[in-house]
Image 1: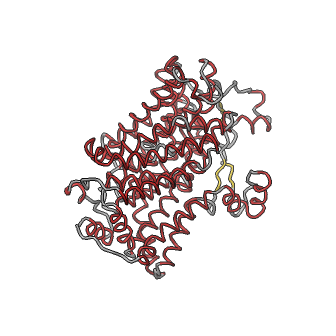
Image 2: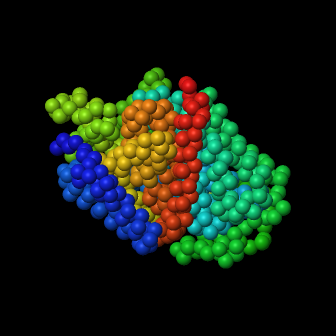
Image 3: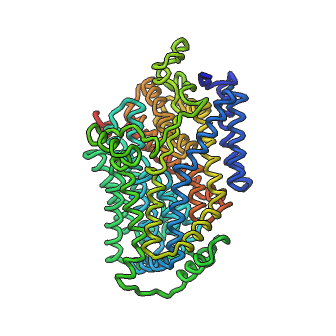
Length: 594
């Protein structure tokens, strides 16, 4: 049943905006204020979103139900699959005792927690974001930091804060490439614009991390390392995006930042070695496996062990496997081959576009009662829906919202991580019965996290297809002169709702372009602000918070993490909004082509 979205169902813009915001308010208040377990808060938010969509926005019941199922399926694959595989890899290294060697080798490089956070959360996280995205860096880096002895709350929160500046260029540049496709703008130019905004934030984020951990006095103790870490990434981010392209910005920047920071840390040592207060560093979650709890306890002692190069190489190999598989799985050529077989690979080599998905490797399912039946309307899109043309297949395919679920079980990033985990088990000679026991334990610990992620994504999808997201977005378009600031806020809201900078660009990219043209603002700047402002919402979206709690064994602590990171997120998006305002009115020469 075809259905055209309505953005003012109450006939009053303020009331309609409140209705649209209701599911988000339910979710955030239950998590952050009433400290309800995440799975029940997510379920309550989903129920609220469903009721608002059906009762007030008059979305057909079948369409709303299909949107919920579509979102839940996407939550399990690829998002939940990534987290599950990453935690399994971590559990294997802990069980075999190799993670104890890894963390001691990092401690031998530097036992200063501030530098460890820069190396893992910021630099290594940026590399993983560039290769995979979709929550992968938070899942992996948070587990690494907790294994090193970071308090779980800080392990999760620091990774959420760090996973901001690289997000716009994450997953081989998909957010920028998608934004270009949605707005009919050259993605290279959008990448140039992002590369003239985000380097400022890339300099700020490492400072923010260290100050969050240790205060300004702590920052002053390691400011040279902070400058090397953020500065090297920011320089690469600017030059690569402006002169090469958006695809490999994070991979190149993350690797160079990691190598530069590690090399500098071996030669320069802070006067005072900083660590978390003992009572804080000893607070670990109750549900850690006994072997993991033991390794954390051992790490917190003052004893340092020396290992042979062979032992170090053996301990680090699972993480080498991880980096290699994540990188390979992220390459467009690999995705084409893993989704479409040899024909898809050949098509990509010839045309630069992937071939048709193989029905076995990546079957595509047009979601019944949702695919090509929902229409966005003006002013979210450039023109009103032509009701007379809605039955026309060509018109439908061009203007209706697509809803195709691709079961890409082989090309999904989580499968690459799983391959790294299984190869690690073979390499470390883990017996099959032991491996099965580890897998069972991981599945048992992750069951509620997977349920929560499914509910969160279902909420995001019904928000998108019902049009409540557009109602919220349209509220920001009334800000006139201050719209460049609120363009960033709109992107932030989009990521907070959907959990993805790419999805936010799909939702609001056209709206940003239309509003910019109506207000006489440069469309390149405003469109790009949706993505660069959006990255700051990554740390508070429910999906990322659940991923961080799952990887640090903090099930039930989602509210505490949300309260920890919320004001960081809001402050950083305000900084990005101010950068956009300055570029719009004071430094317009920074916009490409001006």
